[in-house]
Image (cartoon, rainbow, N blue to C red):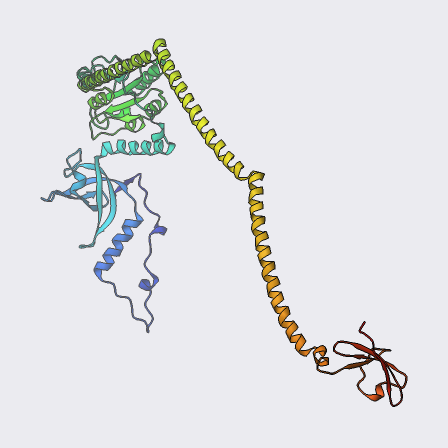
Length: 481
């Protein structure tokens, strides 16, 4: 029977069951759904893939095949069952073991179906020896636990110093890791002080010694960065760096820590907890130590830059000094007095010019006002008025003479006209005008007077008074009044 580890078999109730139409006969009037073999295998594969997560499966390898494609095909079996397995080239390139028939292994696989043959199979992602597999499972479980607690969060990582004052190395004093680290530091940064905390890096005593060294370094605060290092090895050899207590001691350490354990392909819990991981101990040394040659090159460049800046600054200060000396010469009291004297002369010249211009302007203004005043004097206006009065008088006399002439002519004309129609002219021809004395009414008929009435008779040259009698008129001569 095949053993399963970590991964859990799905609940049978969660596996999709065939549709009821496939289990019960269709009605007589309905045609059954026809499914091709390809479609059936495809649906079964999809059902298996979606129903099972990655599983750790333990068993014995048999029928191992290595075709030229680089893939591995084998059967994984135990005493009660077997299952076909396929491990593709992209996955088996990183294998630490060489699979052989009869080897007891632990594989991390996906459940699936090879559709072309309709064969149930496992697609293997990883493979370990059965003994190492238990360690790998424990590694994965601890990794998941610490990650869930947040100990892997990037926000907890402490920054590394750019130029450490003293480096602490927690490692075996006799291992290859310390020799590699010292060799790199001697080449790159030989002046860096180093303090070694000797600990065993393998065996039962290793976790406790590493924890004690970390606590000691944290308590003494002699170093501003630590390297936890060990050379490569199997999963059993790196067991101390996958210890939970060691991981928590690294997380509690206040000094920035670099993990340089094993080779590039080796990952330990310490790598995930540390503030920074280096793939090897040598890489950890390179990571914390600046390159001497690079520093010397940068220092030379900086010195040249400083020298150039100092020359530029000195030249600038020299120019500034020269300028200030010039200004000092310009600000000398004698020079200042000369400038003020020249300024005084200039102001005096401008004052005289302003007075002259002002006098000329005022004179011109006075002349203008005088001329205007002369034009507005009463004498001139009186002469003008008298002249105007004389002209008007002449015009009046002329107009009056003309008017009298016109009126005289008109009067003569009217007199002639009036004389032509005047009663006197009629009287001069022998006619007379008789009027009653009482009311001066003209007597036109006999009935206009009575006997004894007084009348006046107007002749051309004289006027007569008379009294009416019956049948005769008594008259008497009388000169006009």
